[in-house]
Length: 155
Image (cartoon, rainbow, N blue to C red):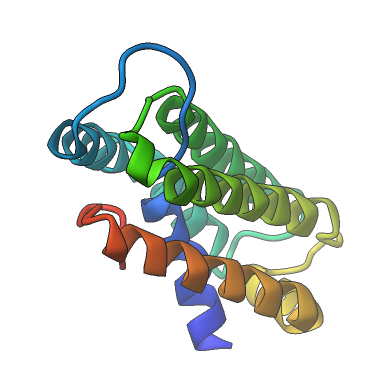
């Protein structure tokens, strides 16, 4: 379960690596710079997930922090999704944004399944299948971040 808790907290750091929308295509270097800058803005989401892990946080408080972390992750993923990567990277970047959005959805789902007086650790223990799915999503996102040189996103 320690790996699960760590991956949940670390995944938020990945939040800014993704997508494609409109405007002129960025060079690879520009894309990497912009994505890494977005990743560095994710400290609040990371803080929210760390707060959820506080042993004194229970029930609605845990859910609040998970929801807040998911919202931050989603906001930064959407910002990256607005970037236009070079055509050769478009599929990878799009896949990455999709993984980040899926992860945010998973955090929201965990939040909605949090029981009154339940700690973060108890929630993870009770939600093993969901945590395993989130870990898989995180692993896939990490692989893409590493392939694309999003150094401030990869863990």
